[in-house]
Amino acid sequence: MGHLNGEYTDSRSTSTWSTKTYLTNVITRIEKEHGILQAYTCPMDLDYHPELDESTLLHGDEISVFRMFIGCAQWAITLGRRDIFYVTTMLSRYNMAPREGHTAAMKKLFGYLKAHVKGKITFDKRPLDVPHATYLESASWKQT
Image (cartoon, rainbow, N blue to C red; front, side, top):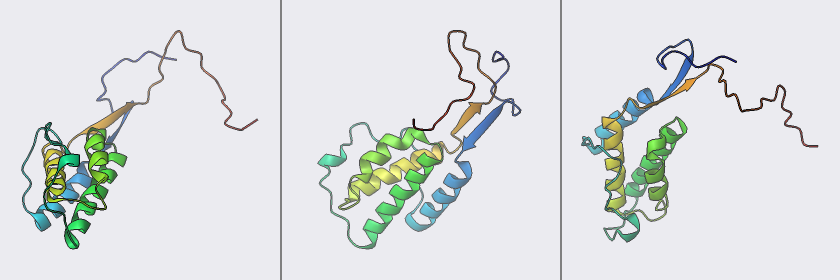
């Protein structure tokens, strides 16, 4: 096993997951249908408590829009955007009875993603040498 030498920008030894194309397409769609999103530096206001939100309940197509926001955010998480996991999970609890405030929070989340669309995860494919670790050559996943 070798030691890690070199930068994480070496494409021969790293692999990157990015949501840039997906988010660009989703944000374009959201802005086309729901107006321009303001850019934010964090995915949710620190003092916002969705469980205390008493704004007007959504009806009909408004509920579908909220659920579309949640679904798009969940897909972004699946593609690697772990930075929005907490906010998305917290707001998804309101899929059955979302309020205007919950939709506003989702728009803020997508405004955050718009400002940080280039977020990515980089994986280093080089072997890792950890002197105190024991490596199994052929692990069996069969139940005994």
